[in-house]
Length: 126
Length: 108
Image 1 (cartoon, chains in turn cyan, orange):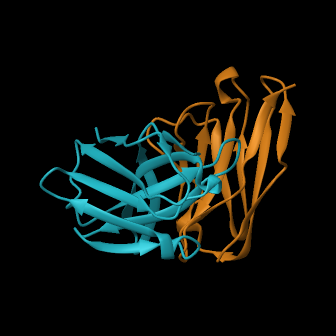
Image 2 (image 1 turned 180 degrees about the vertical axis):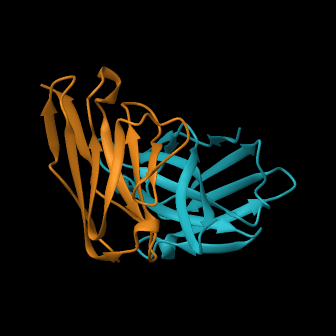
């Protein structure tokens, strides 16, 4: 059973950098078939994919956030991390880490998020 | 970017009734790249359906998914008390990966 756990400050000042870490157990961030992802959800709103990292260092970012986001991995600790710079109140959200995996069958690939962390609320405020 | 539009925004139903949720894509999505999730208040989303119609492990058979191209549907055949929640569709046919805005299924 794969488990993910987010950690990091719950309060970040405007214009500063938000930093979160996701610790993975029961799975490996080095796995070639998994994409370790960050997703956020502003209070009372929907889900927004931020980025993922795979193959121990390849990345893909949402263009809407790409200029401010860095995702990285620490294979020795089985963790991956998110940094979001120049935050504003609009970045206040519950941040989830999740595993995007794929399944191959009958010459088709299926992609889906199968494991999620519990989420951590990050508030941007002075 | 593929925009997913879910309707209705809110569905008010009674336990035992049938729920039909719609997810419409701004351009065609291969069905194998379409998933549905359930989110209860204060919890992370949970995978219900992948490949538009395949139930995830442990998901009851009252949940079913269908559709192709730009129109997808999640059906809950008979609502149980624990099914009242928010439901999201999600695509990864093309980057960026996107979610729909959600449909809230509430008790009438």
